[in-house]
Image 1 (tube, rainbow, N blue to C red):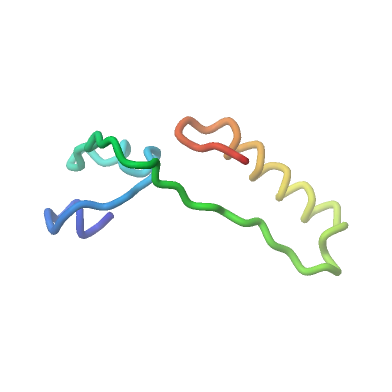
Image 2: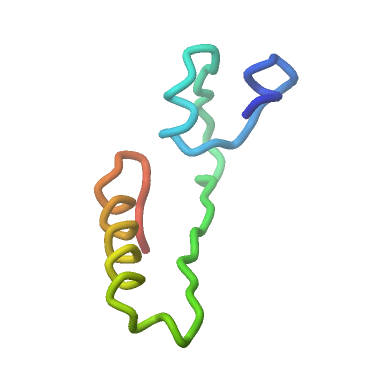
Length: 72
């Protein structure tokens, strides 16, 4: 993102990042959609912790409700 903002080329960015920078221009293309997976990982001893579950639920709901993001 920094290189693209500096004019060094293009970058495959999620919309929520690219749209936040006025100096970047969205390019439309017919190619397959670019996507990245985000994994929420925790140690097996902590996965049942109320605090850890609360944070994981919050993150999953935040991504689900954010424009330009999707949960599969």
